[in-house]
Image (cartoon, rainbow, N blue to C red; front, side, top):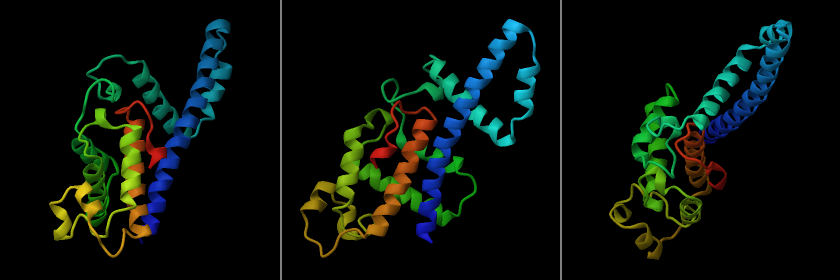
Length: 207
């Protein structure tokens, strides 16, 4: 069941990337036809291009347009232009928005995502978008593989720092399946942060 959820999250990431790529390509074509119309005053090519756009094409264009406008907009109060180098935003607050943006999901699934996110914050010891970096994401990935099972639920681990836990002796480490579930959730969240323009650099490829 969890493997299927992981596959769904990975598919979401791939979908975002494909839609942005498709939308950007269509926007370039749209720009070309608009410039041509301004020169020739013949709207036939432009109208034919618009007429052949599918609903999916329109969706991709809207997504790419939002991305383009966010890049061009210099208003620091616009949430779409807030980046890690400008204004620090609380990651826990944004994660709530991320969960809402996923639409209708089962409470158990939402709890799983939240548990994965909390472990990410616990390992990296960061709280805002401004603190997200290549180093923090790499630290998360490297340390995750060294942690024991149920690190967020077992009483002997709950009140200890990650560094203290790493110094302890325990019979086994986090199962590969559990580690993958955590990585997929964090990767999806990092990709979403990039798409929503909360951070300048897409860090999802590091997780």
